[in-house]
Amino acid sequence: MVSMSRDEIRAAIAARYAGLARAAQSGDVITDGDPAVAAEGSCCATPAYPDTGGLPEAAVRASLGCGNPVAVADLRPGETVLDLGSGGGIDVLLSARRVGPAGKAYGLDMTEEMLGLARANARAAGAENVEFLLGQIEAIPLPDASVDVIISNCVINLSTDRPAVFAESFRVLRSGGRLGISDILAEDHLSPGQQAERGARVGCIAGSPSFTEYRGGLTSAGFTGITITPTHQVADGVHSAIIQAVRP
Image (tube, rainbow, N blue to C red; front, side, top):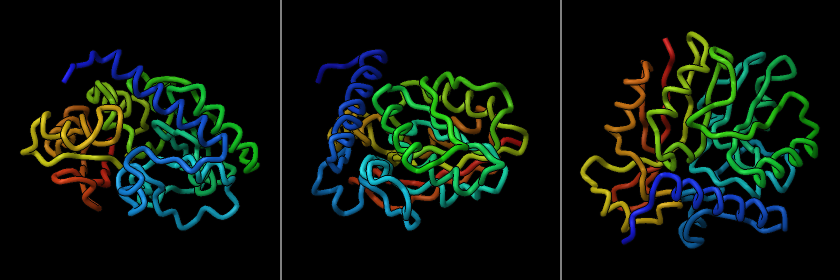
């Protein structure tokens, strides 16, 4: 197996998701994994959202998460929320509903194609308290202490520099700010080679952090109150999980 540099991995991931955005704009239902597996509601398929009524069909079609972070983020009216890797915008639009007109929902994505899709979905939904930003989750283009809550849906596991993601998340969160993340984690005993056997590097499994690595990364960045709760198995030894933490 040929190893890839960080820049090559990032470029491959960007190309993959740009293609998925174009497919969604064409009216396709998209998944980022084996359709046979995705049909079971597993890795990176359309999650089960109970509250999508009134959202544009394209936003629902372009959902590529592994869970529903909005449901566990405990969003409150007036808060500012940031979605890391916002894709077609479904979690941003759902968050915007919860924080209300006095709040704000940001979406950050690395691909112009996904941002174009998300902005079109926001216009179709009539959402005025949303803003979509182009950038990397390892270098968030927002000021220090500007966000109350960070959510993310099956994205951080794809990063080639997760310590930077955790450090940036800590930086932009206000004191007492919260993380509510859905992500893909591997059991501690799996080697990188064993992970690679379970999925492509630009997909949702290979390269995923272990439970210990994820917890350690959050702790090193300064987070406390960390909980990691597996929700379902997406491959042998690999799980979708809900991660919650607090900036003290």
